[in-house]
Image (cartoon, rainbow, N blue to C red):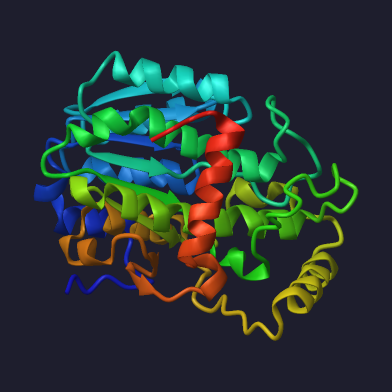
Amino acid sequence: MSGFTQHTTGREVVEKLHELVDGKTIVITGPSHGSIGGETVLSLAAANPKAIFLCGRSMEKIDPVIREFAGQNSQPELTFVPMDLMDLDSVRAAAAKIASQTKVVDVLFNNAGIMTTPWKTTKQGIESQFGVNHLAHFVFTARLLPLLKAASPPATIVNTASTGYQLGGIPFEDLTWDNGAKYHPWLAYASSKTANSLFTVELAKKLQPEGITAFALQPGMPDTNLASHLPQEGPASFKEAHRINTERFGGVEQDFSGDQKTVPQACSTLLAAAFDPNLKAHSGGFLRNCQPYEVMNYAQDPADAQRLWKISEQLSGERF
């Protein structure tokens, strides 16, 4: 086994597995400076990937990562790709730009996300947390699939989820939250994170014949801008979400222990998922602290995974 733990940093993962990182073409969403995604990119400077495509809304937030990386390692080619996850047309354009510059993607980090934001819909009318955290990455993965299938050895897809899924499953019967009237920021966040896990279950199943692996994971909870929209009522809002979830799913024992990390530690599980050969047998599963982790049934149920897949196809118009 790799021996990676909750205390391992991303750079330590890359240093140990550098031969498996060298020469790879990597795509990552949400690599802004100071974020888990940004630190994931900077950790890769300890090896020599061929190219990294950094996808996000703001060049201003990503350029510091590119410059810091270049100061450590000038060999890999880093490319900023504009992409707004609130707009599926922008997501498709980003995938097209990547496809115009490379024939292969070895690793896809579907990492960007939003958390407990106020009620809002995407350009296509989807509740924003579900739209950004799940549906946009569903579309992005579909559009990059030919490049992922071209990879040899087979590619890996890494979906950043969260143990926050424990606050609730997906309200399949009402993804609009009664057009916002019943919207709860924490429950919507949990729904989107459950979607990350279920998407991974079905994705791994569909791509298994190609040898492509897929993982969902909890990176950890460092102090980053992701939490900038936490409800002002704070713990009270969280407790209310827990009460509602308990009514829906019964007594749910939640486990957030060990999730507090530094940003360098938080990116380690992403990098272990992408490159640790000891994890390949767990494709479709959930990782935490660089190791396999068992999630609640509703976050790994095959029937719900298929249901989510069909809904995602209907909402986006994409087919794998």
